[in-house]
Every structure is written in structure tokens, then in C-alpha cells.
Amino acid sequence: MADTPQTPEAVAYQLMRDVLAAEGGALAGDGPSRAWLLTTYAECLKTVRPEVAKASPTHGRSSF
Image (cartoon, rainbow, N blue to C red; front, side, top):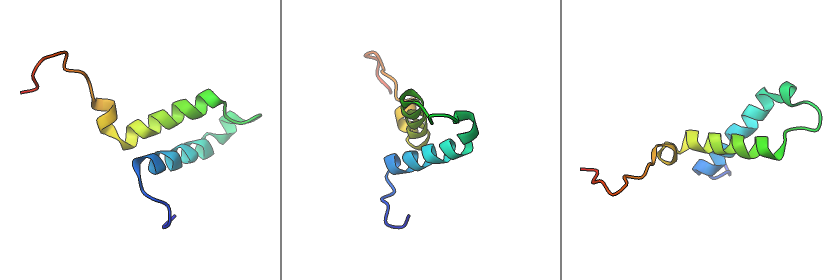
């Protein structure tokens, strides 16, 4: 993993793989669905990039 860039996206992807491994029994059969993969990756990305999750529009109000 030393050669893998440690971008937020790479960390989120590895976290998603860890979640998949931990929940593998619950996802038996054909494996995870596309929706599960995309949703889980999005949640992992929000976890490693909290500024994305906290960003909200100010609706024209000043932040000062």
C-alpha cells in the first residue's frame, strides 16, 4: 500500500472494501449491488472528506 496514493478518494475506496469484508456475510449471493457500492462509497467519502458533508449553502447570508 506504500505505492498507493493517499488521496481522500483512495482512502474512501479502501474503507469501502473494509466495510464489504466486514459485511460479506450479509451480502452473500451475487455480491453487493451497484446501489450498495455507490451508496457505501459515498458514505465513506463523506467520512474521509468531512468538508463535503458539512458544506451547506448560505442562501445569500454572510458567514461573518
